[in-house]
Length: 151
Image 1: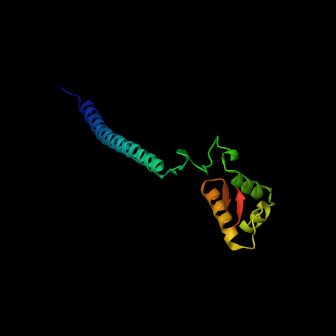
Image 2: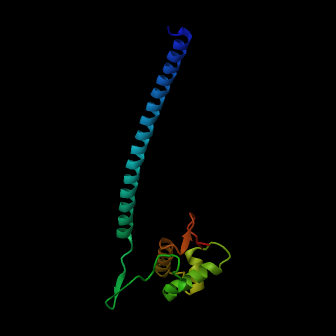
Image 3: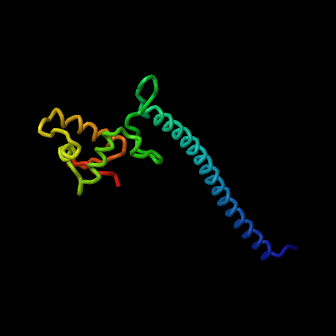
């Protein structure tokens, strides 16, 4: 004859284990789903990184041609690229901005480098050079139109 108390304990334990099995199965499904999502995210990230690299490479400035050789007159500011890689007039412009007490207007830079600032047609090419230096990372342009060195 079977002990009814022992049978009750076995039945109760079996119910606990069945419930635990359901919870673990649910957890396992969630883990597998998340793992699959991470694999998809990783593939998307790799694809996007590749596309961004291609876009950056295609957006890189195209060097000009001088005497049949490719040259970039105003290179982007990068580690290892010094101001001495800039043309002489651009070096003077950076030096003028650097020696100013604070941010300067194009007119003030023109006075230092010897441009006739009273004639607008002489000042605009200088302003263009300042903007080119900003675009290439050598200078910073403030919202009020003044220029300053990056650091």
